[in-house]
Structures are given as C-alpha cells and as structure tokens.
Length: 346
Image 1 (spheres, rainbow, N blue to C red):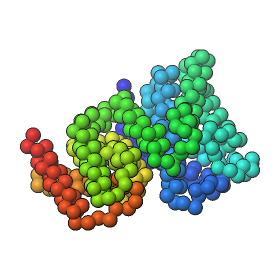
Image 2: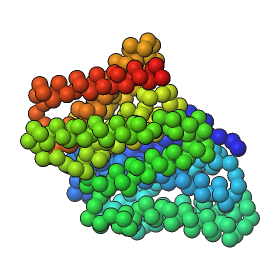
Image 3: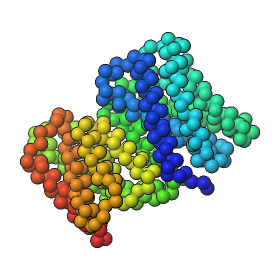
Image 4: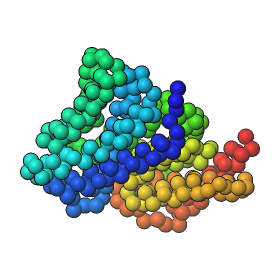
C-alpha cells in the first residue's frame, strides 16, 4: 500500500483551511448574516465550515478509493486540486441569482446546487472512467451525497436551534468526530502518526485531563462562582489533548491534527483558554528540549497552564485570580514536574 507522506497531509490540511477562509469571507461579503458584526462569531462560523470541508476533502477520496480500488494519496491530491470549486457558490448566488440571505442548513440555492452537482458528477464520472461500471459509479455518487448531506444536516442529532454559537454543537458534531476520523485516517495512510496517537492518547492522560478540569471547577465553585458544567467537559478534553502532545514525539501529521483540534476547543472556551493553550503548545513544540531537568520544567509548566485553563473555562463569568488560586497553580506545576520525573525514570 502506498502511504501518504506527512508533508503532503500537512500541505493539503492548510490548503483546505485557506480555501475555507476564502469561502467564509465570500459568504459574509456577499450574503447577510446576523452575526457578521461579531468577529468572535465569524471565527466560530469559520470553524464550522472548515471542519465540514476538512471531513469532505479527506473522506470523499476514501469513498472513491473503495469503489475504484485505487491508492488513496493520488485521489486525495486530485480532490484537493478540485477543492476551490466550493468558492463558486456564494459568487454565483450573489452575481447571477440575486440571493442575499445567508445559507441555512441543507438550503438549496443555484450556487449550492451547482456546487453539489459538480462534486457528485466528478465522483461519478471518475469512478465510471476507472471501473467502466455504471452501478459502482452511481453507488459512489450516492455515498458521497449522503455523507455530505449528513454533515450538513445536524438536525439529525441536535435541535434545529443549535448552531456554531452554542456550547455543544461544534465540539460534539465536528471536533470530536474529526479527531476520531483523523485517527482512523492515519491508521490506513500514515502508520507512524497512528502509532504516535495510540502511544500518546492514553488513559493516563485522559484521567489527568479530568482531574485538572475537576480541580479548576472545584476551585471556582469554592470561590463563589457558578460552574459551567458543559465547559468543564470541554476543558477536560482540551487538557487531555494538551498534556498528551509532549508525552512523546509526534510525527508532523498527528501533531497538526491534535493541535488544531485542541486550539478549536480552546477558542470556543474563550480568549484566556485560547491564549494559554497557545503557550502550552509552544512549550510542547518549541524545539528540541535537552536535559532531564528542562523536560521536567516543561511538564510542570504545561500542567499548571492546564489548571489555569480549567479555571478560566469553568465559570460563567470571568474569574478574578488571587493568591490562593495561584498557589494551587504552583501545586499542579509540582505535580506535572513529578509526573515527568516518573516518566523519565520509567
């Protein structure tokens, strides 16, 4: 089997992010959305679109590969080259159809219809050309349509009122499925990244994430703040990802996927969590760390940052830090330092 090279995965990943940003910019420039005066909501809207397109770009060639028996990497490259077609929809709707309202879930406009027709017909004609089997071509087109339709219709799982602005939609409908899908993707196309994920995303890190998130929630509760239970779950997931990354060397592809998911979670939790997560990732990937003491310091710093992330994420209102909270941060720094020491000697 021909495996996907790390640099190709990363290149396609960032290319999709760039084209998705152009698509979101085009929609907001040409169509009317209620949130367009809020930069924070625009960026959450971008995350919704970005994850949808990422899932599509990496899953469509996987479906075609099943029907054509061709290797995955060339199909992914071809899909990436055709991906800018998504830019057509808002331009066609604005300049040719006079459409002015922002898109709703599963809405069919001339631009959206053109986009879907181009995608499905590309899959059908390519499969037909490679297999000379009209039934396989039709099945490939149908599977592609159902996959794109499912991820465009969150009403199957969530209430129609929930969208990118809610506290549960993006995380459970896109972030977590993306991470699970990325792991399965690496299993078949990048074995080094898959082995790194199996090694690093272990039960101990999951337990540590929950302990630090619970400690942060308990701290803000004792200090008289109301605890946001859903955010505690998201913070635990975020901390799990942050403490897993420096647990061992990750290949570039796995590091990009895990880091992007972590930063996505952090952004939905607020600016403090986002900034602290950037610092934690900087510590995790800030060059080769030499010396066991330096590694212990890094482990302690990431644990302390994770605890602060939990504090800022758990409360409904901004938390005023005081000396007692800082003292607990020092305590978790020591715990992280000791944990890294145990990892070193074991």
